[in-house]
Amino acid sequence: MSKITKETNIIEMIKKYPETAQALFDLGIHCVGCHAASFETLEQGFKGHGLTDEQIEKAVKELNKTAEKSGNKTEEKKEEE
Image (cartoon, rainbow, N blue to C red; front, side, top):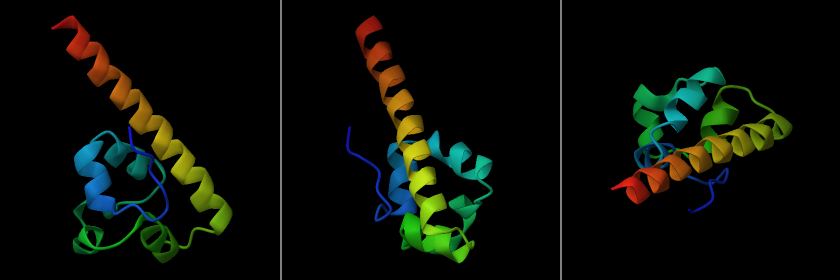
């Protein structure tokens, strides 16, 4: 699994880890439907919503946790098949 960073493109992250879309909503960030998400990084999107560097760091950690859980579910599903 590749790590999500603040430089990760929003739409690319959501395509790779769809569950992160809900995690963004839970953080109060509704970038999923925004046209800027196709070219903005997480940091740009978060800064645009007024998050501090500390909040961005915490959010990226949460997104990685979500993506990791998603990856684990995918691996479990593959093993069952």
